[in-house]
Image 1 (cartoon, rainbow, N blue to C red):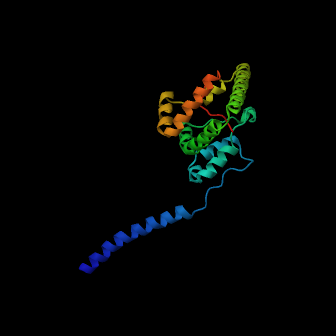
Image 2: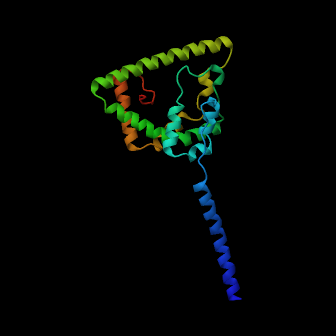
Image 3: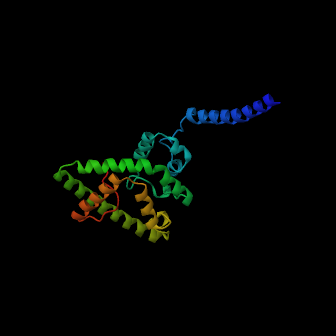
Length: 202
């Protein structure tokens, strides 16, 4: 009787452990997801970044995908602008946060590694780029107003409390990142540029 009871207990312990071990091995050994190819639409790429599959990619692959799919100004036809659900937007921010923070830190470090003359030239380039972006946004607003459509920035503006988003960003950034951001904003204000919270692109 005692041996039978011991056997039942052993089975009760061993079977769940074997199941967990097998599932863990499956998760570890299963093939990595394949990102959307070159023919994928912007919507398909954004939806992939908002999916669980994107998070399964190694951080180096996440960064590669973000870099290769960085939106270029004027590169997307009007009809390809996409909207995500609030849940997808939240997941997109969560999925890409670590990769974006790493990339941002590198860009900030590269900026401060420049000579004073190089930083000045980079800030002038940023100022010109921001002016061009404002002009494009104004042209888009005028075109959308003429067509009777809602302004693009209203359709794609993140929902939720902006202060909460700022707090969340700070809570998920390192002390080094916050220090670099602060120093960058000071440099931009000194050059007469209104900081947008984004570092220069390398």
